[in-house]
Amino acid sequence: MPQAVDGELLKKSLGARDAGLRRTAAWSLERLARSGFLAGEVERKVAPALVKACGRDKDAEVRAAALLALEAVEAAGHPLPEFSEQLTRALSDKRFALRVAGLEVLARRQGDGAVERVRPLAADPEMAVRKAALDTLAALESKAALLVLVERLEKESELRLRWRAVGHLRRLTGMKHRLDPRPWRRLAEEATEGWRPVRGSSADQTHPDNATSSFVGLPVISERVCFLVDFSGSIWMERGGGRTRKDVAADELRQALESLPETTHFNVIPYTETPHPWQEELVPATERNVRAAIKFFDGCNERGTGNFWDAALLALTDESVDTIMALTDGAPTGGRRWNLELMADLLPEQSRYRQVAFDVLLVDASSFLRRHWERLCTATGGRTVQVDL
Image 1: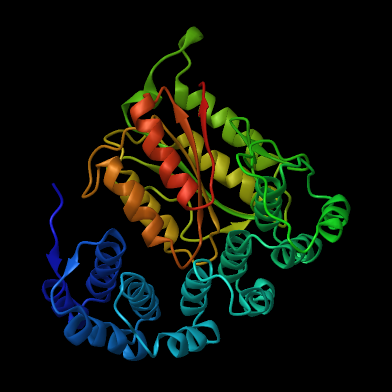
Image 2 (image 1 turned 180 degrees about the vertical axis):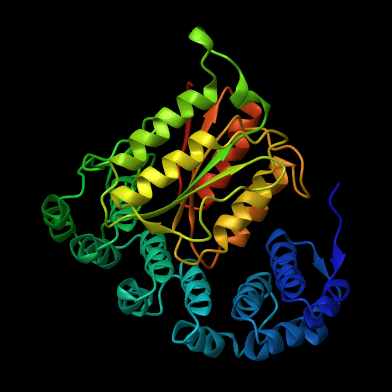
């Protein structure tokens, strides 16, 4: 049975030297407040510590986490008179993590001219902010928000975000139009002022119509993608003719890379107990780079456990990555983090302000594992599919 936790136990960690610990403390306070298990002198001691962290911490993501914790504290019934002002400052802060966090708050605060506050951020220079803005507009569920979603579909340059907008429009309207904004524009303009979204519809983004590349059948809908491939035991299983699953994966990766437009930037990271990156950061998909990546992958014969956690964190250190496509048997093994149920919460938090999508291709994964991968991917705006090798 869950029990209440005294917030002062975590408040002390807001002043820790390690930024990761400070951020985790703020996130923990947020989760406790949202679940109704935050106890202690919240208004007198916990909230002031969060206000200080939100306004003064040197790390932008700690400040963002503190803002979200303050929102949760206020929603739990603790008045915070200055929170509206803090939200306004966050939405215009020069550090994009604060703008992303502010948009997440707006998604839960209907009214107060929310759509007009989101509109300029939907055209923000930072892709993470634009993605957060799309999600916030979808959450606002109004005709005005619908029109801005269509406007972004018309103007957005990133393929991943155009499909994100389409996914939201499909869910809200029940229609199945694709990337052509014209039918969406007609639908939005014809909606009445009292329009409400269709309930029970889904947004299937598995089969985009204009993707030039796919990996094991899943369309690549990113121009800044990192491929992770699990080299733990199962990939070395032999198929017919003496070929292993690794051989098949190599064929699939070759096809994917060779069909990427040169405007796409990519990297390849096989992983065992440690990640084995081809490059330190994304590189353009030129013919020369593609050949070099294929040669690297073909020659990589690492074996061992499958430490997905460290491989994902390594991919996230490259700030240009917006999508991680991972091929795995679904069961993380080895490393500091191997419990998938916990990772399904922790990895979305790690990419919360970067807004990196996880697309995961599962080979022979159990239904139990699939559920947790689906939760992880959905939380990041990504996709999960079961594939055969």
